[in-house]
Length: 539
Image (cartoon, rainbow, N blue to C red; front, side):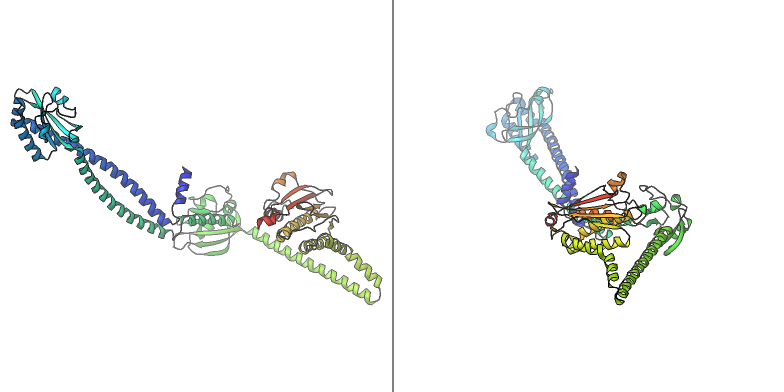
């Protein structure tokens, strides 16, 4: 049934107005057609019954005619024929046939057929049982509806029969005329129905701002997605103070189940927040006000609907979360100060080197420079040979500098080789994968007794292989299955759990895979595998 409805929906136009007109008109045509067919059938049956009754009444009058009764009794066909034809012409019947008890005609519209047996085989009930009835049969003139009545003498004994008939084809002509009338009335009804359907469709279209059903559905889904994605709690109330909208964040802040349906309930039934309820009923906008909601201090914004008393919408978020964001910003500022101090330290070393050169202590200056740059130069030489791609080499070199700032021993495996890096592979995805894996490894070893991170790259075979190993605590098997979900982190801090999610998304774009295992230096080993040919296929 659903598939049939779906196919019909695809066949119908996309315009709601046209669709409504067609649906209403189609339904109206169906109903009018059914009613017309039933009415037409009823009219036909009624006409047959009426004509049958008329035939019986005329035949009864014929059977009571004294001249005919006398002619039947004496067997005088001449007198009977004259009387019968006079009655036929007067009543408009197709035929008036009089016969005796043997079924021999004493009258007929065609005089040549007088003296022959009556055709049709339906006179026995009249002759043998004395019944008067309507019958449908085929005679010499064709199919007909006939009324048959017994002719009785003065002693009330059956001495013959009278049959008055109307041809079925004449009846069908009358029926078709009646059906034509029905069709004309039905056409008028359909025209009025189409006009009414057009007015209804236009009115409905204007009420929904000219939107189509698929546009309304898209807006509804978009609205739900937007409201659900907002981290602030959002509620709206109608003029009576009943909840009409509560997003997931608001349910969480109010201490309700994420799946709880709070619509239709008063706000006071959900939480003790008199200040918020009073502000919602004042029909005045309110911005960045601190209120106590569900036992927590919230920063609240309220905006009433257009008409006074129509309701309002409120958004709120715990003040402590905003305070935490402020603290994180302060930490970023402190980190910036730390980088500036480190820059100052390198400046001092440069000044020291310059001073040693000026006083002629060239060997001491050279020793100091070599001490600072030996690892850096060795990495540059290795990268120049193993990773000719400047973008990938650049991110590795940047992470090397970052590791030195964090006092982490960053080891780039000399057996690495990335000389066969296809041009069509998206470098942004590669940088996302490599950069976030290294950042994750740096975070893992910050508090470890041994602060070491290793990187191995290879392009042998049909795939690229990135291995990042750290000396941290490793990854618990309980979270391996959800490690790459958004917001999942082993750090226990808010605002984390994004890096590995971005890695997973970039690998999905390149149709790659990633595995997590245990490394040789005690921590986690992340292995990313990227097919070389996938970028060309996606173009």
